[in-house]
Image 1: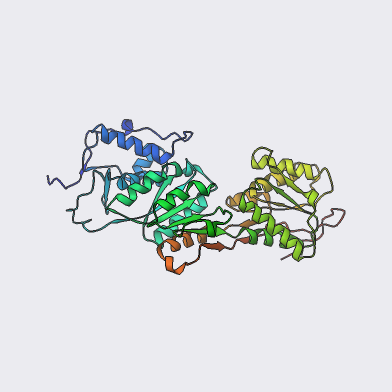
Image 2: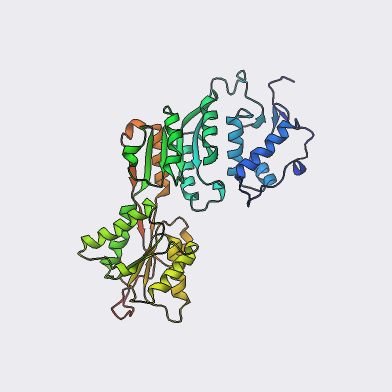
Length: 399
């Protein structure tokens, strides 16, 4: 047999050779898959040029998604532990330059780093990853390599030193602390970074030239949500919020206040509740609505995310007589919640954000500024009602 000819792994019972990933583990799912395959290679149960099972079969063996398996395999390829041949599969060992199918070609990669250790299970970030994946596939014509933030420095060094990899750039998603990422950005001035979603004060002036930001326009979202309620006749609009040190939430509150100012109104301070000391978001929304009903009832409640809104709506529905108080949420990252609970929301355009993030990597000259803000969209849900000063329901207001 020609030494460069891939072969199917012999003598391995895959049913017993690997185990299902542990979804309650602190180790990321893709990392568990990667470690098990590396162990088989280190024990020489997998030899050079042995072919691994297909993506669907590996996903079944590890009891996880094909996306998780694909991430693990791409990291093994980036490390030089495995190689991939078009239309044939993934094989053990470093790709040889003499292989005719791959000679002179480099694998194009966009790295996506997330602070979530188990980002595969992060349902809130899932729409952002989907938007990025579409942009990487159709705009950059590249492969997506996901990695947890704690491994980012090591992963980036490996990608930059691998001659078989063409690194298009790095997207930093779900970033809760910018200061922890800046040393990595400064260490690699040749790499273009994009920060996605979370905003930070002075980002435009306090960061190196090789990092760019794509953000949801939070101020716009807070403004349009509040204006919608004001235009429909509501005047006593309460706010349920928490973590006001989060700049995204601060901007939503600023939009709420500016909408009142532009309408010649003043927000009512006693109707703005900080629920930071409560429990989970749903519980906070329930507790916040119960607290509001102890005093002067609001006409409407603006919740700074959909989970708060769902909790608030659940409390209203639990009462023997449901007060005619309309609820406005924000995010729409879990669309079924706002639809089932029948509250209005502001939907973030995660697909557009992902597309723009990749465009910023591959067309830096078309994005000379530091930040792009993607406008959200108001998503009204029925029933749409007005209430009078005695909290009696009037005819629906069609908008």
